[in-house]
Image (cartoon, rainbow, N blue to C red; front, side):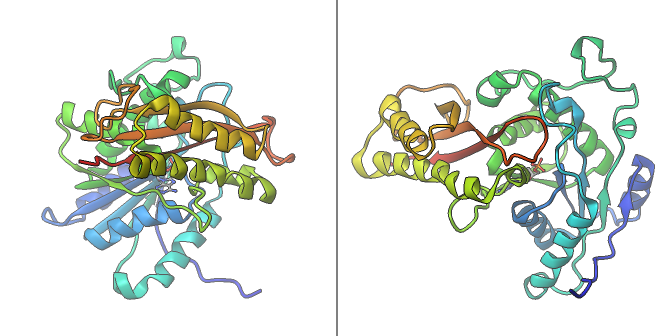
Length: 323
Ligand code: AMP
């Protein structure tokens, strides 16, 4: 097989190097920023593509942020592969050269160490942690926050650090992590941060499965079965839009039955309907507002990955206002 040429993108490891690059940009030039945990796929690349299209410069970060993982979660096994990531970017730039224009490039990948990002040091034991952390109250509490209590504290903290290091004009986030977009937007507004946040729709494969780095944990059989998550949300959306079903119990039942009838080993963590702005739990969908359907489901891992037997997948769908 021919060795494919890789994009020549500087990989910066320190905040000082990143700031030096940022200072080299003219004040009026726009800087798009895409924070990621790496193991890039087309979902990430759609965010990066949007940044390349809209900005003079684009910086991406690859950092598996320990403070957003619980001690029981997959921090150690989370896929890390810079060569893979470089190749994905190279292929994307080549495939999209016409739309983007040949001059478009990713200016830098910021790939810091944990020590660089946590100057006060870092420990997974929250009671022993020292230094500055950021909390966004209210919108961090339901859904993922309820299941993963310090998750959004970790996300808000690392995103603040990254924003301070990059100083972007626009940051791009995926609807795939919909609560994260609400938490980050609230944080940017409340902490008077001077940047725009743009949300990019979820990128799915041809069968509707939301692309995710964690899909790597699944066997090909599982990858085809988990498309039931998307199917279940579409069926529920159809009941809302075509049959005017607004009862959350009825809409939830459609989702859970579709998933559990596909594979009885699929373990639903939650299926939830929430207000699109406050993320408050609802029992009835208000057709004037619509809502967010979101879910987390544990599915069996491929046997040869890590110690955990299951992968936790999340997905969501926005139910639009109907009147
Ligand atoms: P992650 O590397 O999983 O932290 O994701 C980095 C960014 O990519 C986040 O803003 C995610 O919401 C976004 N993202 C991940 N998967 C997708 C997807 N399938 N479609 C759109 N955005 C995504």
